[in-house]
Amino acid sequence: MLLTPLVLLFMTVGIIIGGASSHVREVFERIKLGGVPAPIAVGLIVMMWPVLTRVQYEEFPTIFSSRAIWVHIGISFALNWIIGPLLMLGLSWATLPDSPKYRLGVIMVGISRCIAMGMIWSNLARGDCDYCAIIVVFNAILQMILYPPYALLFVDLIGEHDPIHVSYVATAISVFIYLGIPLVAGVVTRYTVWALKGKEFMNGTFIPSIAPIALLGLLYAILVLSAYQAHRVIRDIAPLIRVLLPLALYSVIMFACTLVMMFSLSKREGNGNRRFAYDVAVVQAFTVSSNNFGSAIGIAIAMYGINSEEALPAMIAPLADIPVLLALTWLAPYVKKKVQWGTLESVSDRRKSRFELRVRLDFHQYTDEQHDTTVKKDSESLFSTAKSLTRLSLPGCTV
Image 1 (cartoon, helix red, strand yellow):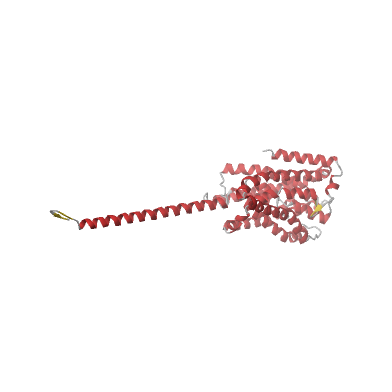
Image 2 (cartoon, helix red, strand yellow):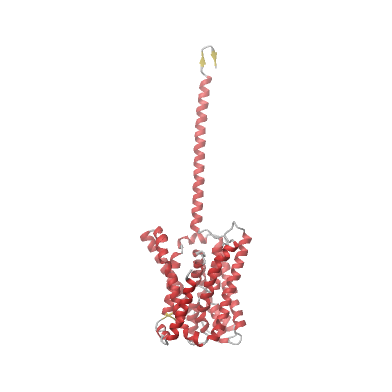
């Protein structure tokens, strides 16, 4: 797979472009969306559109009718909104005890839960797209509600920093930009193509044809993010490495612990139960180990300014997230194969299996009824013949 060298190449080219020209940042900052330069925001939106078009929204009622999805939503809440922020808080204090401003920025990244990139990583690792969409939307709703009070709790009280005031409106706008816009575009595209060309064309031709756009959007976002941060990468390399350390450690620790936990639950449930199958487990692992750096960038810039030390961790978070999580998309399938981890059948496959079973049962029942009717008719005919014979008289004998 060429994605890894391409990511490294685009990151390198971006840093070279940004370092060679002092006007890159000025050009990027002319238009902003939610506090983030428009070229970066466009890349983050475009890469989500094909993934969200692929999601089978029509199957959501069936998925929500199962107890398994509610179990996973509960697990996601515990990992994303209790364990994750506490882990990032601990790592920020452990690695940056003498840098309160950088520590504040790391904490703000830690409470910005994943609402976009997790779908890209889950898709690359062969995770279940439908489950991932549900978890991502769930996190997006909670982020709009919980980010301001979490900022108060983790930054002001526990983090021992000067009070900050995060607006619910600003958070909602950020979530809408990075999830709402591509979500609406995905839904409209899916059902428009379905209505005009049919489901078979949509699944067999259209969705595979737009799939590369997600990777192109990812590479474009990496290029512009790297170019935008080039001057800081070159100028502040020492503090940059210190800030990248807790962010990278967070992704690795959360991914590994979540995958181990899900595999343990899978083994406890037994091979016949797919509630904790690989393609669902990997969704949980990637959504908890990634962060919504788009939202974190917008809020940090709005609160402290684009050149502040507090905004640096959010702005360079992709430089830690992308290489680490890309490596984990290679590791996850290897682990699956190594431990022989079963996968979850799609909802449509399960429906098809149940339909085929019902058809077979109905067919057997029909043939049994036909057989019983035939036997009954043959028996009645034989009995009638025997009864006639009892009345038959032959010369010299009586039957």
